[in-house]
Amino acid sequence: MRGGRRAGDPASYGPLIFVVTREPLALRFWEALLIERRFAVVPFGEPAQALEMYAALRPDAIVASKRDLPLLRQRLSFGGRDPVTPLVELVSTPDLVEPVMQAIRRALRAPHRMAS
Image (spheres, rainbow, N blue to C red):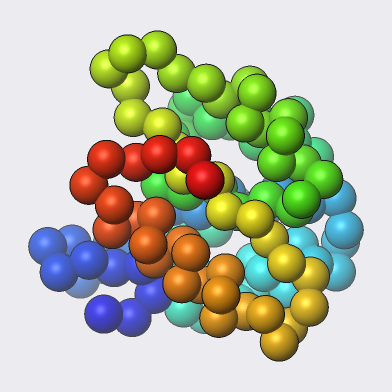
């Protein structure tokens, strides 16, 4: 399957990914790359913006810079029955695209989501 689509997903479905990084070039790069691979993407330059939109949009995964992951992990802790949205660390060099893509795909396929 291309992108993050799973076998049971409708043809027009693309998993919603939040991209969070304070680096404008990295934000544009990852947004374009994920859109090209048929994900639905919402980019954020600040983790606070992503946290504000989290409850309304409930992304399938969050890809964030190493700098922003601790705050997101801390603020996105869930009680008992709520699934945990997977967090994937963003890398800034283009030659490391495939490991991030694999981590996103693994997170989307996991039957019980867990923060990474």
